[in-house]
Image 1 (cartoon, rainbow, N blue to C red):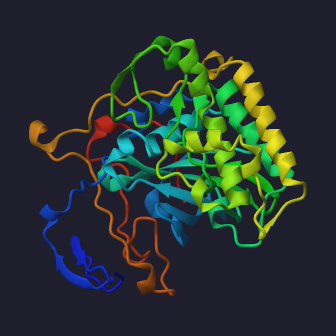
Image 2: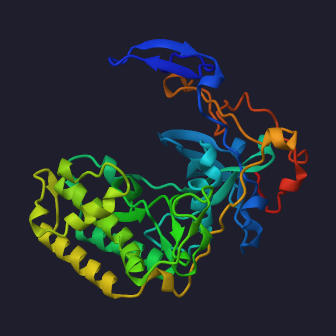
Length: 388
């Protein structure tokens, strides 16, 4: 794939992995460049203190970590020192709904928590009219549980940290994570602590009582939500608990039969794992306590949450604003909407002697940015800029 030309849009591949045919016809690919809502559209000026904002062209990519996730460096204007951060970028059009939109909205409202990822700055793309193209998080050395190298491990403290993070989201903020998995549980090796990642699928639980317009996974898919019955609210309240139970068990039991085929099956897998007989430690997993101690802790937590307060009764509920309107339509509006096509060199073809920026261009190719010239001033830029 690294040898394909940058303008290739479609590839036909044989069952054995050979490239049979390619095309440059964009019509064969069902993909639209992501629409990037502005700072104003996010409603972020209402937050105090305001969130720092950095241009994407000021971020130098140090390492590509995963799809849409890069390690970057930038000059901190307060100290004039270069700092490391983790950049999460917008790739797909549905960024207006779930994903980046919800991630930012949830993280900007959450009080700091040691075991939940935090928001450092917004990243804007000046070419698209100062639309938000991503955000930065503190860079941490470590790995997600999905990619932990054998021997695998899971000490008791990580379980207690996971339980504390989930209870904080659910019972203090009234937020359901909805996507707790080994991929979204990060281990910070510098502190040997667990950090919960990715709130892009989060939802607010206040809608359980109020109904009305809302969303479950993605705000761009607007739906009319029903008022849940007490029984359904209790079942919904257990969702993150079931997901967390499945994530822990799948990591230390490592039984392929416990892998859900889809997100909805995680609840069912969590319920299945209440069966004590399924908790058999894999030979390659290292624990600092008997596996049944972890099992008993999770079962006690399940019972406590089942009989305790509901997330929709959280004392300090976080409000996630839904993005009810669709992105501007170029044909209907008679003008091009500010979207972004983002191409960057394949990893195998990067020039190690030339710093590459988060824009996908090498530093010596990046044009000078004139911030006074904004393609659409109505999109606004009300917040201070981190000028490197």
